Length: 339
Image 1: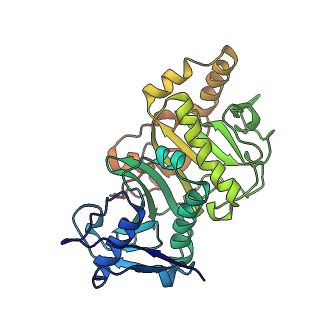
Image 2: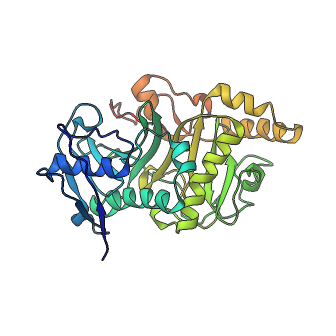
Image 3: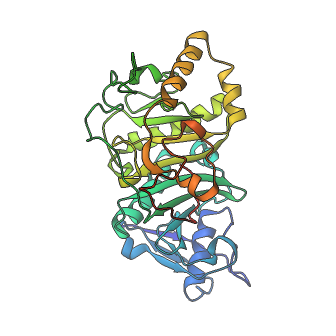
């Protein structure tokens, strides 16, 4: 098993967590969690066992004001809300936005970053049902995990007319003539044989990125599939000039589809400008898609955002109810995440 030696530059006060040097970020966190190295070389054991590499980080102002742990040489995890929300931050260059991180970081490092997170969530914490969200902030990007919410999961069995597996699957069963899954594919952004990009099949302002192979969890993707899924998103956003609001990858009971489905949400103005570049055929497709989407049956569960805020940005295209049927108890939740 290999050892990696990194020199530590002593200072009168602990190094700032936002230092750009990978070594500085890791060494400063190690100093905070243990005795000073006294200027000697810090020896880091390169391991895969989470039990060996986890290092608690004392609370500080800002991101580290909650219980935190360095779960690998590149990822810090913070318990933002006990049994409700986790946040993950890339330690080697924490000021980068997500698109910059994907573009400027090696394939191996990007893959390792997401593997570290899924190991923490699924193996160490034993979570199977969760809402995975990527967001940009003023101080870089974060991955947020929400869990322990009441969610019902997909309505159909895994391979019954799976829109990710069957290109001829009808997106709107019961509406004639309907629309096939393959009609919404954006080949100019897709990366076969790994990932396919579609217009949001519910007529909303966003996109869907699915692996070509049927998988249900990000941890089931091989390295090429994992890297392709995230690089496809960034390449599409760069080519269209659209910043993203959030990137959503639901797991377990948080899903509406069994096939792994990365949702890319963008703002209305950006999407409107993107639509101006469409040809006549794609515009007609979009109009058909919206017509079908607004008339599809709603899930018999009140929209989280309607419950919390009294409105939902998806409006009539939301999959969930924007009213309170008598059979549903009104419950207030204070979790903060995007659908």
